Length: 316
Image (spheres, rainbow, N blue to C red):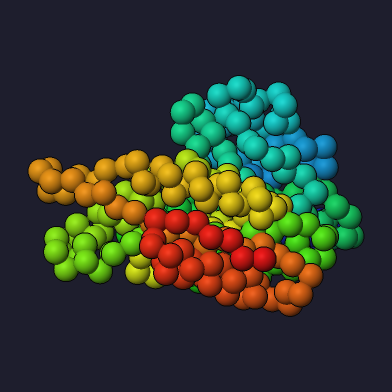
């Protein structure tokens, strides 16, 4: 009888223990599910395109924002590679393998966005590589604002030409490049004749229009690799890489002649005949800095001024 009661007690004990184990196990699973739901909800509301891939480049997880970018449902993405799901409407300008982070253009339809792509390897408990965790941030606004700030830092506010700071930054680099490679380098210095008289007679707003008009005249006469800048007031300078003094003199003559034939309208009524004086100089074996060329170019400019203006002079 005792053994029967004992046996019954043992079975009863283990039955209750199993129930407690099942309840605890169920509770742990439910807790894990809730945590997964919270994590997914968090990732879906982060302002980033998040996804994971296995070692074969197949999607294992994709948040809602990434699904919208791909234009696919979750069932169409999981287990698939980029090649299988990305169509011609979505274009990425870079292969995203091999780099931990990079800046890429992602185009969808007629819109192109600048994105920063972060890729981090995923490891298991043993340290084996099992895939990648990928995050894409839309940095278009930051990129455009940063580009505009850089432009403002290097651009003359009135004419849109490069400013003095950028001019000399490029000048020293181009000088060392030309010197090391034994290539020609020329500089053209330009000054608007009687500019002070224009300001005094017509006002500074007309003077500003004259500066803008002269700038527009010069732009088509130079190459994309040339550096043209407003150094201050009515003074301009052009750096011509890989250009001999004869070629630079030809370009200077063409600019002077075009301005000589131009007319600048003032207040929609009167017109001005604005003239310019120009000096030209080129790199020679005695030059040790870019300033040596610029000084000779300025001296040639002053020679044009002293000889009656509206002229081009060259100094070796």
